[in-house]
Image (spheres, rainbow over the protein chains, first blue to last red):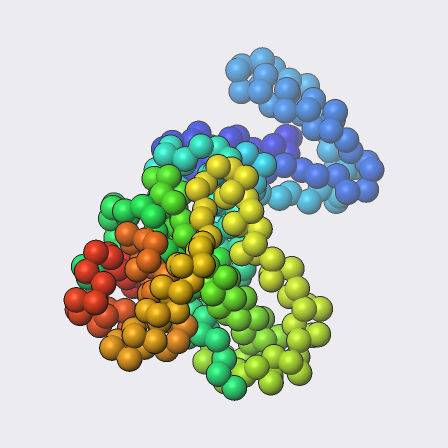
Length: 129
Length: 190
C-alpha cells in the first residue's frame, strides 16, 4: 500500500494542492524510500504490476501532512488557506504580477491571525491618553 | 472629491496613498475589511501603481498591531479599552509573546521594494512638510477630522491621485470640494 496520494490537477481557479507526504520523524524512513514508493505508485497507475510491500513496521511513525502551495516554497494548511486567501482571486493576481511581487504579496496578506470582532479603523487610531 | 467604494476591478490611479487601516487591514486576517484590504493591495501590486507611505501610516499600523496583541494576550474582546499607559505596563509581555508581529509591516515594505514595487515615502521636501502642516489644521477644522486623519488627507492631497481608506469619516469629506482632484476609495466589509 502506498502512503502517497495522487496530486490534484491544477486549474486556473483552483490552487494546486499537494499530495499527502509522509514524513518520517524517527529515522526509520528516508527520502529515498519515499522516492521508491512514488515510483512504485506511478508505475502501478500506468499498469505495471508491483510487488506487494509491507509497511506495517513504519506505519506508527508516519505523520501525514497536507497543505496548499500558494507560491513556490510557500505552503499553508487548508484552514490557513481559507482564512488568508479564501475568496481572493489569487490566480488572477498571480498572472498580473512578477513572481517576486506575487510571493511578497501572499507572504504579507493575513500574516497576523486576526478575529472577526476587530475593527481595524478603530485600533489604528493612536491612543489619546 | 470623487468617492468610490472598492470592488474588484476598480481602477486605482497611481500614485495611491494608503491609510493605516488598509495596511493593517491586509496584514491582520478575519475582520470584516480583510478581504477587500487584501484585494486592494493586490490590485496596487499587480497594476504597478506607486504606493505612497508615510511614517504616520507605519506608526498607526504599529499601534494597531500592538493593540491586537494586547487583546490576544489577555483574551479580550475586540473593543476593549486601550491606552498608552496600558501599553507601557504590558509592553514587555506583548513583545515577549508577539514581538515578531511588530516587524510584519516593515518586512512587507522591504519585500515589496526588493521585488521592484514602487514604494515612495512622503513627505519628501521641506516645502512639502510645510504644505502638509498648513493643510492639516485646515482639514481638522473644515472636515472635523482628528489630527491624524487630517494629516493623512493632507499627505494624500499633496502627493496622491488616490486615497484608500476604510474610515467612514472620509466619505463625508468626499462630499466637500476641499480636495477636488483626489479620488477616495473606501473599503467596506466583503
